[in-house]
Length: 113
Length: 113
Image (cartoon, each protein chain N blue to C red):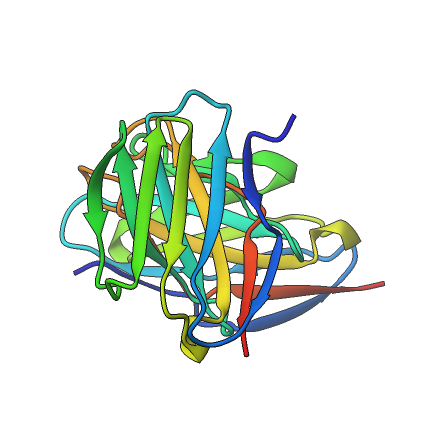
């Protein structure tokens, strides 16, 4: 069975600092990997996805993520965080066939002025 | 024009009542889903419909019954509400049953008293 672990429940960074949110997955075949962001009172919005090819993927809002098969990781990064990035971030893994996404528990990002 | 819209946004009701949550999409997507997000932000799929047919039915009590009158709508009816049903319920869509990204509604916060 597939699973996703986001080790950090909360992260606080200063505005302008760099950010890395960790995601580790467990899946027996080639994973389809996603990062979603949830602002308060909102639904989830797709930031980026990895299906195949280049292991460094670019997303919206200046985010990127790197797929590392050897580490079963798909960490999300941003070079310079803005106050508007404060939100809940979810990593998800999907089956090769079918859209049964399994979500991680989320990481709440807080941004200090 | 909201792509995935859910109504109501908030729903407060007493134990034992029956309630429905509606979801409508104008994206022309074939697949629609219901997800449940608990108080710890854990997100879990409940149902998936593809072209009005049930594809995924996770371990959900049969008090929960989804209904898809057409491709653009997927409603969730809940009978005999229990305290543990309190959560945020998200409707989502995807272009197809494969791993195309999910588009989420803004959620319905259900509180059972």
